[in-house]
Length: 327
Ligand code: TXA
Ligand code: MG
Image (cartoon, rainbow, N blue to C red; front, side):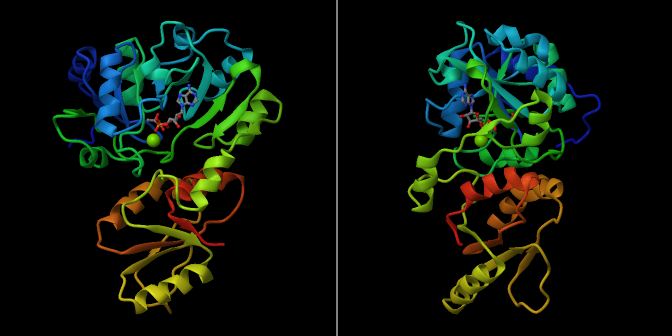
């Protein structure tokens, strides 16, 4: 696949999208699986291809702020402030939907998620398309999100997705930050590419962070289907905690790999050194999990990365990807 995206031929992608077919698209966060948001039958193909429950809403991708009112109504001033500050970019705004926005997109809710992605190919595609593209991450439901075109190719058959636009490796590497502005109150629903602090600076006020307590509890007992997860079980914990498990597993003849913050030359286990910087960590985490997933390990043991605001999105994704979190 070509990585030259200075002169992409978007005509084939536009024709497929207008015909109600799916196209893999690059964004700065992760690759998306796109369909024309105004065609419910096309959006239904996304859910079928991903194996995703029908009541999960999908984000509508647009070229920019000019299209906000095509999809949302009763738009608060805060939406314009945030869109002006961060679009195109990794921020999704949840707003009251326009009446025409289909239940297939909103999951039957009264709200719609909107984002203008920054990747030049997809920005240009959206500009030429004119409408909105419904697009979740281009992975099977629950699996690791894709950050290259090749990852997307591994997730779907050519019958499901005949065209994937190759825009190279994603710069951000984790999904967009989701902020709800419904009812004029700003709530952080998912940490991501734009930091909470940056959003609070623009709004000049603190925002609530909503975590789903119920599902968090289920996750601890291992009942909830995992998200962003490799096929090989992943356990996270302190270096001491994962070394203890590594030792036990090796004695039981299991093949383990350690994903650590430092390289430990005194340890005999296979190791993957993880980046020190949160930006580099986010960029590479999904690709690293996918690569290790294909190397025949029985268990991935990951040292919990540092705490701190700039690591929030990474901790969020690792918590959901991990089968078990050691304390
Ligand atoms: O960075 C991203 O956001 C990527 C790229 C492709 O744009 N997309 C992405 O989509 O992560 P997906 O479907 O994997 O995750 C979207 C999240 C879901 O958790 C969904 O529940 C939430 O956005 N969402 C979408 N519309 C919503 C709405 N109206 N109300 C609440 N949550 C919504
Ligand atoms: Mg996803």
